[in-house]
Length: 376
Image 1: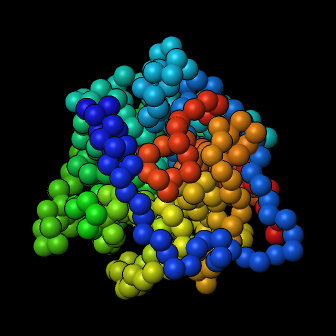
Image 2: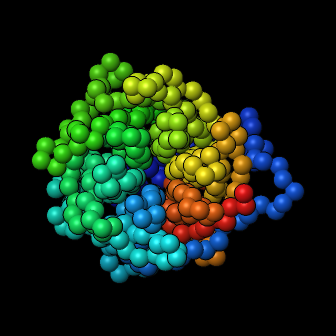
Image 3: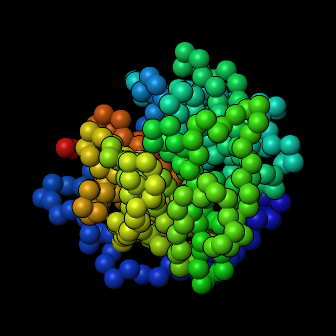
């Protein structure tokens, strides 16, 4: 089923083009006399990684990242790998050394699909790592997983929630978990409805996993649905990246619109407003907030670009390049960026959907992580 879905997605996206914005991201970028910093190579990943997806920081300030290994079929057809790679979580330590933090075990796999598809991840207030297991492409039931952590090491995985459609990004604010659901409903070329769910940590139990009810329409949906978004329907991918600033404002990237929305809450966590915050990208993906620079950092998957978004919603282009294999550290369909210290780490997801406005044309080796040195 995953092969059929990915093939159908590639065919449909090859017929699409996202509506052009009146102002491009490059026009929105900060004007400076200094040369634009380019991404550099941090690491060429081993064959056990072929689609690095999302980032988080753990309790020890290590960078953790998921790799659902969605390119197994593509790489096998190209003769690049001898056998499918099991999904993993990698770690970048304080010295920028990359190691495998956790390899998913047979007991972790979703029963129907026989696999796990780890996308977004985030450290919870309990110190454990929570992951969106996005099963839509695999044919199973999507789940929220908790990787139990002891002294910085993974000691087991529990299922704590089930039933979301396309869980993608995960973010915590206080004791509440927020999960973007990229596709609640879609009508190709007309509109996509997507959303963000909000769950308190007290509701997440391995003994009794939370069961989300399916989204039906604007009147019938699960009580945990916190916010919804309507986008243009060009890709069928809406709410994607998710982040919070230090004031508790939520930022949600809307992929097919190339935009970011800002959602405010009152002191009790009730939604107050949701407004357009930034725009001008082609098809943005993962987002992270950096408290030191007081800014958001975001990738544009389709345009091979990374931006900083300041608190006034303006975009500053940090790095961008054409179609490459990323061997020298160039961006290669970047999926997410996270800042640690004065470095921005970039996962090169290397997706290729066949859309005419997507720079990347094919998944290829090497699989890499790039780094951008920030001058601030």
